[in-house]
Image (cartoon, rainbow over all chains, first blue to last red; front, top):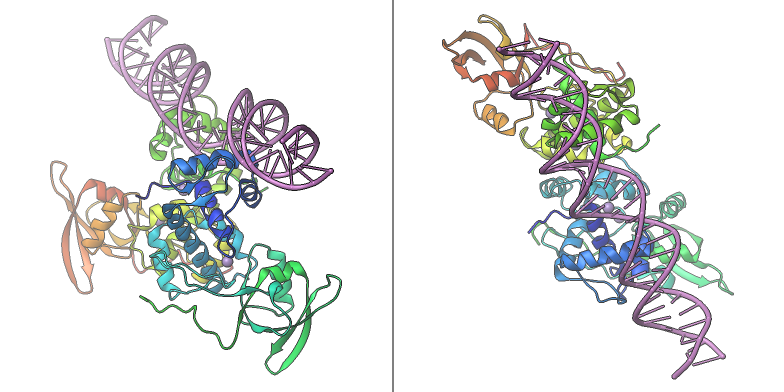
Length: 237
Length: 237
DNA sequence: CCTAGTATTTAGGTGTACCGAAAAAATGTG
DNA sequence: CACATTTTTTCGGTACACCTAAATACTAGG
Ligand SMILES: [Mn+2]
Ligand SMILES: [Mn+2]
Ligand SMILES: [Mn+2]
Ligand SMILES: [Mn+2]
């Protein structure tokens, strides 16, 4: 069953999964190549191997979709990655912009035993330092229904539940501006002619306005409504 | 400076170092091959590469010796390995026979930052769960002067300061027999005709005799004399 | 000091994961 | 609906870390 996949294989599968985690369309070869930082030709070859391994469905020139088995592998890797990120932040004092690269390597080196011991030590967290849900060992993903800040209309209010960890600079910028998970935001308006979004930020009574560039608004996810709920996972639930 | 060595390269260098850690003679190609579990021919090729990288001294048909640079790299890897083992035992509840394999992989995946944060969290330990000294970040090794149990004459007493972690089964056996680091032992006699060594074990007042097979006596290191001393390392010392 | 046996290296070959360039299929725009 | 553009695959090659089998160098016994 555990046929010992290579690091590359694991990263391909994880990347394919990640693409559809916050949207619907399946990933194409060139998108996969771009995200992995490899040539298109490399992807073509690897996708054929993944198909032979039964991890993806693919017909030539079509998009790449995970099989059930592929999804299972992907969730294992995502669980590892996010638990490791949580460990690095909670236990080793990393900041949230430093953890992604480190976890990207570690995820391929840890054993199942390590992961489960670590999860227990961390108290089986349901989300990672960026608000991404941590799949359970059984392969279920806490559903987080949130919307991209960019797609919210003026008037909408909510709290930030996720910030994409893809760009460390963006994370540093947001930390510097004192914007983090669980920050309360309200969309005020969009400045005309494709200008930035303006949001109001609640800060314990006080509030301030903040201009959000589109690239930032694309990386921030907001859950409408009131106090934090859902997304916690009782051990054994 | 950090030219990003491969995992294989790191393991070769570490294995070359380990061979001379508890004895003098430098390692030969076939010994290296046996320890790494690869063919002799693979070692020949790799040793040439290590030489090109400036990590070892070697002339054809000669033994393999680390250069200063090679020793530096080896100590870095040994530090990683032993700190990871300590982490696994102290923080994740591994037993001492389970940690070696896990650390063998993790040591190649962690960053310098990770290692130093981990060392600090663990309180900069001076030795690992098997009693092996943990080199400092600066590359100095706490000197532990101990002798193989097998080489002690009857009458000799001391405490166990190191047990080779090479054989997990042996470690499980010793744990089962309630023999661990810091156990007090006295060599009683050697049974005739190449029989086992008999040692007396102090156990809080009580004491019992124990037969030690040669393979075990080779793996256990004893420091003569009284209470535990040396081998602790003040932070910054 | 020669030679049989052992240790080591060289030669030729495998699998994995990449690459750039060339060929083939899909796409969309007039 | 043709055909130029873009996307994807195929093709030939590289680097790495292994392998087995063959060749070569050391070494110890006679
Ligand atoms: Mn990865
Ligand atoms: Mn994350
Ligand atoms: Mn290793
Ligand atoms: Mn150890």
